[in-house]
Image 1 (tube, rainbow, N blue to C red):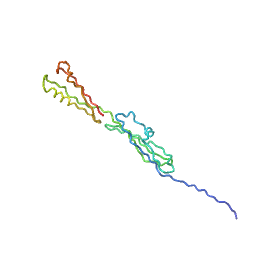
Image 2: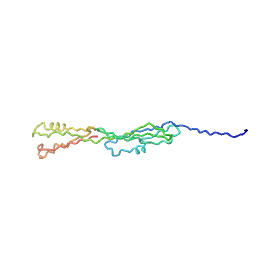
Image 3: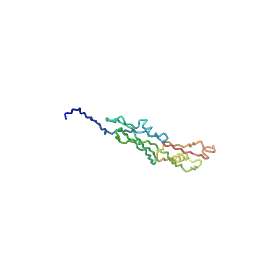
Length: 178
C-alpha cells in the first residue's frame, strides 16, 4: 500500500511519593495550680509546640497538621489535657502521631490538725515549754502538694485579762501549700 506516516507516542512519567511527613511535639510548661489558661490545640500549633519536619518528596510542601484527639486525664492530684496531632501531606501520606500534655495541679483542701485547747496552771515554771510543745503539735497535710509554710499567731503578751500571763488567748494556725 505504500503509505507513509509519522508515528508518535506520548509517555507520562509519574513520580510516586511514599515518604510520610514527620510531626514533632514539644513539652508544654506546667500550669501550676490552675488550668484557667490552658491552651487550645490550635494555640499549641500557633505557639510552635507542634510542627512538621520537611522530608524530601513530591508533596513535602503540602503538609497539613491534623488534630487527632483531645483526651482529659484526671488523677488524684493533676489534670492533664492531651492534645494529639499528625500531619498529612498532599499525596495522602500520614505522619507519626505526637502529643502535647498540658497539666496543672488540682486544688486540694489542706487538712489541718489543730491541737486541743491547752490549760495551764498559773505560775507554773514549765508554762513556756508546755506552750512551745503545744504549738508544735499542729500539723497540716495536702495529699498533692507539700506544705511549705505554716505559722500561728501566738503572742505571749496577748492574754485576755492583761494581767501578766493569766487569762486566755485564741491561737490561729495557718498553712500554705505550693
